Image 1 (cartoon, rainbow, N blue to C red):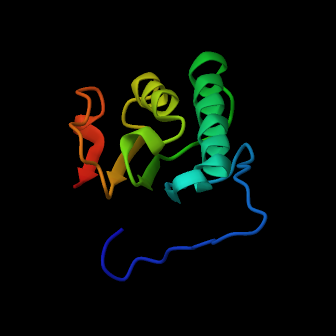
Image 2 (cartoon, rainbow, N blue to C red):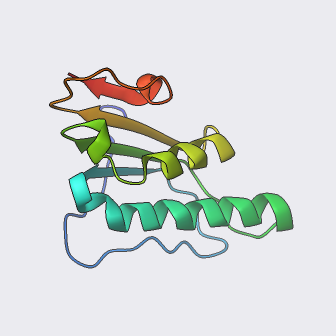
Length: 119
């Protein structure tokens, strides 16, 4: 976003991402903390499926990017982290993630280090 950009926010409740063929592409910013990742991880999997179909079968979905910001106390509390890293590798530049840890006391593993901010 840039200064004066319009954004839409949705907090809690029932929500989903279901783009239709022919819709204009949108860039998603997903923000999760702790177990709040569950519905957003489902959205990421759906986006990955659509990207896979788009690359393999030439479907009519036009997708933007998805950026996940995910926070937890420690890296051990980041649910689905290996799956998320796998999605980032499978769809570079299309699906990205920044993990934020607030109370990590031990060293962060090398695989996660480029994607982790915080203490």
